[in-house]
Image (cartoon, rainbow, N blue to C red):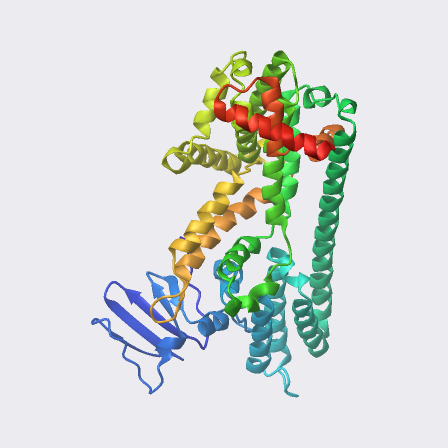
Length: 493
């Protein structure tokens, strides 16, 4: 669990250690060994308290958590708390609402509307507040795609810069850095649109003239290790552009299908997570297409062995997502049923890879391999290929999903369950480490273009191609083949 021991001045604190409990309210505290809260005033301050166990924050009211992230001249929130709260607070409130509340609290507490301000205090506070804004913009830049976020950001930085001109440069650097990040995202999103359009155009061209497409992946990139490197380029590019908040926002999307919660509908500003999942599916179908499109058995067997070698190279460089996508493609029904083709394949390497991706015991073998890759990356030099760790992304999403589903957002007294925040933050912190790695391999543009835009068969087309490569064996397969041929004839009329 991430450690958190920082406390916000002026807040209420509740500390528990075994059966000993203490509550502090603005410097006054009482304690009891009975586990009963004894307060020295008439207000129920437990509703505004932060609760700690063994020095770790475990729960607290939303109001207390927001207060805890408010900097002063002498205080700056603990960075682990700041990341965890900025990540998961969106389960309770929109980022623009949080920033608005934060700014209003600072204006009120620091009396920024007063005509009598102590300059040294203002400089210290302003520096801390600018640092908080900088960390928010650096770690969660996609929050600022919301115009309301940009409005709050510009208003508070302009106000502080007017009160203390020495802060103007820092404010400008924050906004400029943010604009660069958002421009990079916009460019990436534009590239995705153009790539998808090119892939669609090539698919239409294939349907119009199947004979014109006689090239396969081995003609473009004959070396398996080179293809694994190019796959790693694509994986890291897609991974890098996923914002950490997209994981948590996907939970919100799941939870807000009813009309009562439609107030969260404007959360989603990016779809990089979905684009990455779509890439996994595309790679799986591309592998199956490359195998099934060949009439000759020896060519299909050669391609299967080629992809097995590519998958092994992906494993060696820590690219588990491409490895699993390739194995998924080779295990698709249209490929798996090609018994005569598989009879020509050396199965030893394939079986080793299948063991690595065995789902038994919640993918225990894969998790051990991932752990080893993470350990290797810790000691690797910057720019080395050993720095690369690309997880099996669908399993990462599944882990986060079950963590979200398995832990309540709030405790019985209505407090935020911060233990859940810590667990989400820990897993997403690992993700941030993985995505902030530069790919050390040279780019092969022709290979990259083929991987991203080569025609990919639909599931029905794959089955049809599979049946035409090796005849149906069972009655069910023969019925399926006949139905697919009729569908194909109807389309071609």
